[in-house]
Amino acid sequence: MNLINKIKNFETLDLMQEANKITLAEHGNKITLERAIFLSWWCDKGDCLFCYMSSQKPKIKEPQKARRNVNSILAEAELCRRTGMKIEFLSGGYGSYSTEEIRNISREIYRITGEPVWLNIGITKDLEEYGEEIAGITGAVEVANPELHDKICPSKSLEDITEMLEFAGDLGFQKAITVILGLGETPDDLKYLFDMIENVGIDRVTFYSLNPHKETVYENEPQPASLYYAGVVAATRIKFPKLKIITGTWIDNLANMGPLLLSGANGLTKFPLFKMFGTRYGKRVEKEVYWAGRELIGTFTDIDALTKSKSKNPELEPFIQRYVNKCIK
Image 1 (cartoon, helix red, strand yellow):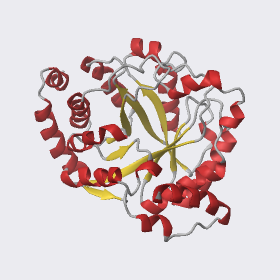
Image 2: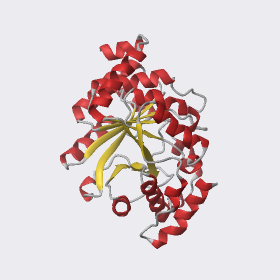
Image 3: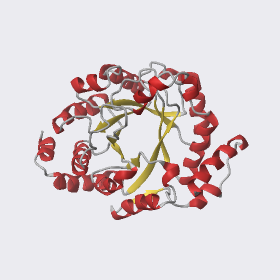
């Protein structure tokens, strides 16, 4: 495949240039800040080799205590509304919340933000329980190479993920997948990813770079090279011009953002919101977007955006204020 060969032949800049033209033509220059809201730090499966939850499972004796307070979740959604950040999805490990609980949380967030939410809650057959509060369903593919996937995520088969996403499409939901770069994949594995996007009719892909967690097999592995990351995103954009692409990078790799935007990203994610907001790191995010020639939707620096609005639910105010205080500090 020509796109894959270009990555392998170090023609990343050519890919980025072509991808940038396609992105501006198909999507314009607006960029969203996206934030995944976690529901819990417990996962019944807990055996994905890269995952922080896999390191925590042996330490958690009472899984119910690993669940977040629902008011804390809703307070985070309120701050996303105030700052213009988009909720990328609600994310929770297997067995942390019931379908009814997730549906009720989703409905409350829908009331707060006015926008239906995406779910990334593992493989489930309960999709018919959800309604207008849900925009789409995300499958945590992580790596699309079937052989590699079975080694890294032994309890989440690609077949089951694909079946869930196809069912979601039948119900009228949008479909998304997450992919982590740096798990041992090669550029040739893009053929599996491209086939999945095309065959399943994926609407959105979130790319992450590996974040090596302690007590996992990847703790001493490097994060993927920035130009490799950019090349993968650019090739995906060229192959699928209308696809929404979100790219994630951590606070120690903020310099990745400019190249990723020029490679076709529509949104940025994976930020520690309350540690970065209003700091030099938050300012850096906005500068990266600016110098990529893009316009940011929302803010990572305007403290007034956090404080001048009020929640319609008074019960949330103490939780909201706790987060606001973290940002101000």
